[in-house]
Length: 503
Image (cartoon, rainbow, N blue to C red; front, side, top):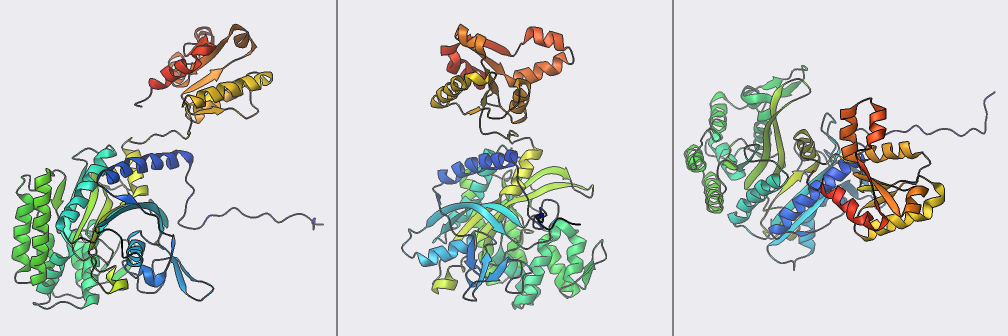
């Protein structure tokens, strides 16, 4: 007979598309954020925090392929039957904040880091909660601000250890795209729905290739799984115009003239379209600013294929892509791709104020960039926040150990006292497993002699690997452990830590 008093166990479950992040990745992410923040602040951007929850109408419907009130976002009704949603980016909340604070300095330059949420199909490297780190300039229509976005992107990637040649910032302008669409429409703007579908098709170029885009612009495309995506329905001549636009070369030009050459080709393609020519002029201004600041085509290019998926962009758009090669889950070798993106959005604040408030900015996908840095070996893999472990060899000396810990912490050395119940061997293993650099050991003999022992754990691991299974030799030599006078504790520990300061 079943025990009626036995408690029902709760099954440990996690929401689809979400994840637990361990200490090593959290610490690596925090270290990356510190370096990014330093670059942002060096340009004059200041911090801002906005809530994770916003009214749906304040966020707006700007996600690609999101046609319903809760399309692409986590949304629910509150106690007043208002639609509430988790923010899907940090830009829409910024526009709401600016509208509610009309006395902000102009331009208002802010940065913000935090999680955002999207209802997307989970997959390798794709999650429904992920971190973004934005910077924006609100209240200026100058292309200097857009050019500066590209400079910040370059400087940030280099500050994270990504060398020139391993990344590229690609720049385009939505107005140029609109000019091309006018040309496709015979001099008249296409309908908003058709324009949006053309842009979505172009934005899939990296995934489906030129032939795939051609099919999507026409009757449609069937993917490898057999799923069919309906096409835009353009005529052959209209498709040819779009393909001519996508065929404009940028990366193949090695000289500083290449950005100007691309602008010349785009100007010919948009013809008499006023909006298209305005977009080309904006690209020329950005090129001039980048040229003046010394950012050449080895760092930033004009690339007509850049679209950006969000619908609120109104002018220049840009993305930072990593160009080193990786092998995807299907075994295909390709470039790592985009980790940084943004653009100009001059209409977002106007939705609230009915006044034009120009703005531009960019955002890093923190989680995706962290994955890239791990591939490149540019992150610290330690899962600890302390460098030193004070072991407990003798329970009767616990107060002495606490004094040692307090002394090291007072000297600015991040130190942990072992509070577990294992013996000294397990304590050393714990120290190594959690990434400590040094361990402090003191038994009664050392106490009576006025000494402590300092063990260099990293050197110990290296020598242990060299000596191998010769335990007798290891015990005889103890090469990574030294005894020093008690009053030399702090100095000796600092010496050990200094060996690995740049590791």
